[in-house]
Structure formats: structure tokens, C-alpha cells
Length: 151
Image (cartoon, rainbow, N blue to C red; front, side, top):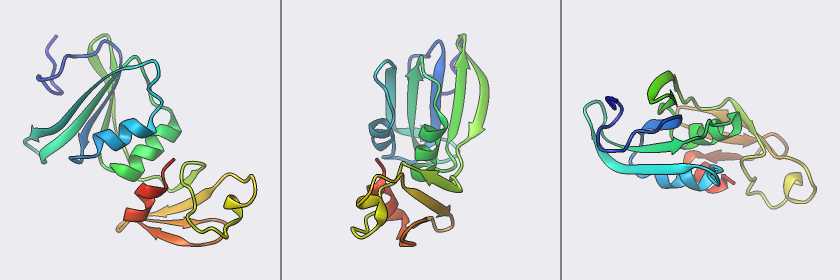
């Protein structure tokens, strides 16, 4: 098989490849995903003709759920998700910044109801620059804070 994604990493049979990740984001992404049954290869600071440098994550035997894609969209919007089947790219999609998220960000406002009762958090996400606004307490967080709020 000709591995057209990156010839430096062993190709996977079936699963997911995250490509065009910002340099340094691969480790944070791995911390957020459920990888208990997957074989994973990571490449950090790989040369890219389009971006100069990038990170890559190969996850053999796993297809990402919507919540996982949303988490990646908060860390690496504009990255590419490739679905691999039988050693070939079956489909590609761009990871976008989600419009809203539920249960994946923790509100940092101690007085927010989500920190005092069993209520799933909800945030409205705005991009350019990225911001997250709590649905309940309406506290707004900048991109730097969003990365700290991911659970």
C-alpha cells in the first residue's frame, strides 16, 4: 500500500487519522480521547508543504464519536479527519469549531449552577477569535481558557 498521508508512519488497516493538527496539539488530543482499545501512532512536528510543520495521530481500529470530534474542534479547528478502511482513505472531513457543546467543558465560575448541582454544562462557541459562553451563568472564556476547561 502506498501511504499518501505520511510515509514515516506505519499505515493502519482501519481506523482514523487526524492530519494537519497544529504542532503540539497531538498529546492534548490523546488525553481527551477514549483510547482504551486502540493502537495509536503519533508524529509531532512533522514537515508539511502546506503548513510548514504539523502533528499527526493514527488511531487503528477506532472511529471517533461526535463528542470526540467536538473536543478536537476546540483544540485543532481546520484539521483533517481521515477514515481508513482496508488500508485506504475512505473519506475525509475537516474538523470544524463546534457551534455549541454539552458536557465537555467545565465552567470555571465557582458560582455557576453546573458546579453546585448535577447539571450537564452547555456552552455556545464563537470563533474568530474562539470564545465559549456558559449557557447558565453567561461567563465568557477566551481560547486559552477553553483548553483548560476541557474534560
